[in-house]
Image (cartoon, rainbow, N blue to C red; front, side, top):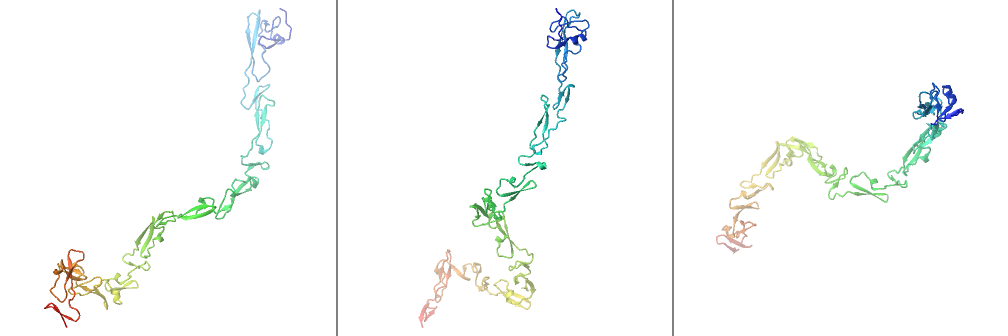
Length: 426
């Protein structure tokens, strides 16, 4: 086989192999075809890193002997395997010739010194030249705020035109970058948010006169107040409920000697508590007495005070029609009226035969304060006296009647004779 004198060759596996490199290692290329070397005693075909491509970042290539007969009389083959690329952390790139991982942004400044476009960011880009990119920043202000470049700050407003809250019933002003909204002054009325005009009312809820006993409605921007209908009762302005009364004043019975209260719509009347004293109905105050009857016997009431003695008979009135009331030097003397066999009418103070049937005999009834015999017929009433007329039995709806006196039988100018039972002309 002829000797090949080319300065470099390629193995069967695509790796460059130089004659110089082999001779330096005691390895000759003479007399071999592509990818085949002639063994020289003591020669290692992988000696001196024949597979190294001179690129550190793709790793160290590996040379492997494929065939070695051992006696150097035959051919020798070898193979090159790719190395493991250098693995760098995110944000770093591998650099030649050292094969070290470095941050390409370490000495790079992306800032454009403009506040309002945000902060620019350097990002490693290992596959580009240069090996970094500058990403634009974002607006530092919220969507509803404004950026002021010469102050490096964000504000709510730059002037009044930025202060519009969409409410027609407010006026917006800008001060120190902050919006201030002042309500439209409608006095006692309300503002219409549709057009910003003032009116008495816009809806029913605007009609509140503070009185629970009215219902307010809004019509054509004017309030109308309708009283709560309580029928015969009254409305309580505190809660709008109906009852017999709304407050204590509604329960006034015009009696100073009662305390008038309204509770849960109902009136209550409690007597003024004067203890052992009495209440003066003229002013509702407590006093020792108001009239003589408020004092004990032998005392009279003067200037609301009980004093011994009396002034006149009138102050001695004990309220009993059947006593004679006299003011004496020792005080009031109340003496029962003497009616003898009769009895005293406690209403009129006069002496009468009877007041009720208990004052008559068993066969009598009390009629007009006089005892009358009971009867069932006229003949039971005859007293045997001609000249007083014929007695009759009068019934008042009962089965038993009473005898009524008769009428004198003789006319004017006649004389009655009881013995003969006749009337004779004079």
